Length: 190
Image (tube, rainbow, N blue to C red; front, top):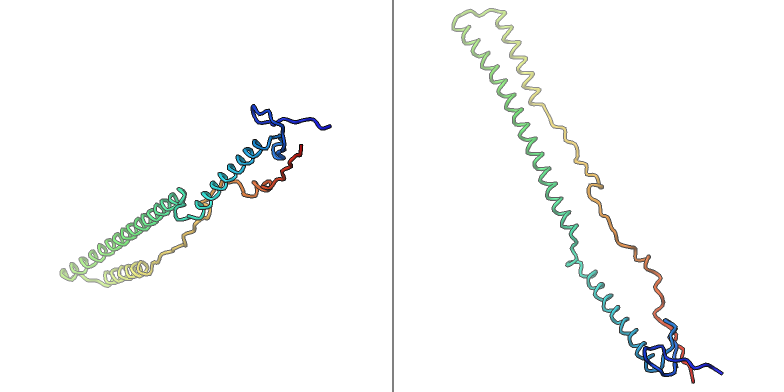
């Protein structure tokens, strides 16, 4: 003879007629239906959460993480730094050019003054002409060298590790396998 099992629902004295395999509790038919309905409601709530997450993932236009904004700011700052560097180099090269120009102009003015003075005083000698000629040739070489100067521009090397994405999201596969959503319900006959 089979012993009578009582419904495990709080303050229920009815005989159990169903066993929930999921939680292994005995229920009367009324409480089993309530128990089953509460599980269905929980599943529906989970389905709602899944649907909201699905919408969130699919609405990528609204999904703009802060790190993309940070990357844009970093990029703008990097552009400013490169522009600042180039402006500083331009200024440096202009200063070099003006210094070179001033030195050559000063030297040419000095030579011009010497020639004018010696012509006026009529004290021109061959040694003086040779000296002036050597100075002119030296200046010509310096001017030619300066005019043939060129820049050495190396490509800007950007290390891929300057910006890194650190993800702290668990792998979806870590969550799998999910238990089967289907269960067999055994009903007992009295």
